[in-house]
Length: 226
Image (tube, rainbow, N blue to C red; front, side, top):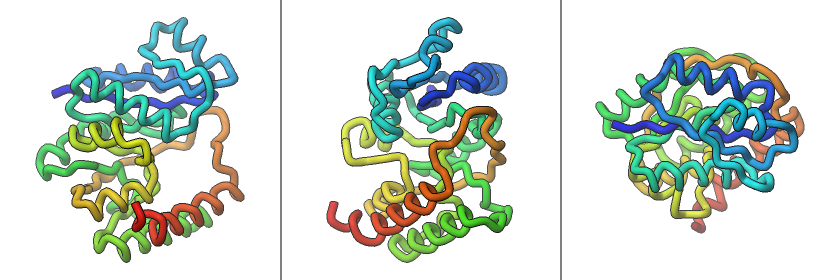
C-alpha cells in the first residue's frame, strides 16, 4: 500500500522543515510531495537546500490548483491513498495510520481527520460557521459530517483520479457535499490538531466570515447546477 502526503505550501519558510521532518520521523511509511505554490518567501529555496521532494509552481495558483497538482502527482505514480496535509504544522502525522485503517475497514472514499467526532466544538465565531456548514451538509446530503472544515483528509484511488482530472473539484466542504450527493462514501476519525507553528493564516476574521458565507451558498445553490 502506497500513501502520499500532499503538502501545499505558500510562504511557509518558517515551518516547512519541521513539518516534513516530523512526517518522516512519525510516519516513515508515508511518502510526500511539497507543492510550493509560487511562494514569495524562501520556501522553495529551503526545500531545495534540504533535498525535499517538491513540485515548484512558478506563480501562486491557490489551494485548489496546488492540491490538484498533488493529486495529478499521486495518480501518475500509482498511489493508493493521498492525504491532504498542511505545511504549517497543524496536522499531526501520527493520525494518518488511523485514517488509512478506517478507509480500509469501511471502504470510505474520503476519510476526514475530525477534531470534533467525540469532542465538542469550542465557542467561537469560526466554530459557529463550521456548525452552520455541518447543518447545511446534513440538509443537502442527509449525512452528518462533524468537522466539514477540517483540512486533513485522506482520499482513495477513485477520488485521486477524479481530483486529478476534474478541474472544478476543490479541497473544500462544498466539493465534499457534492461528492457525497454523487455517492462518495465519507467517514471520520478523531484527530487532534495544533495551532500553526509559524507564519500567519490567510484567513483573517473578515475572510473567515466571507469564506463561510461563500461555502454555505455554494452547497445550497451552486453545487446543484454542476
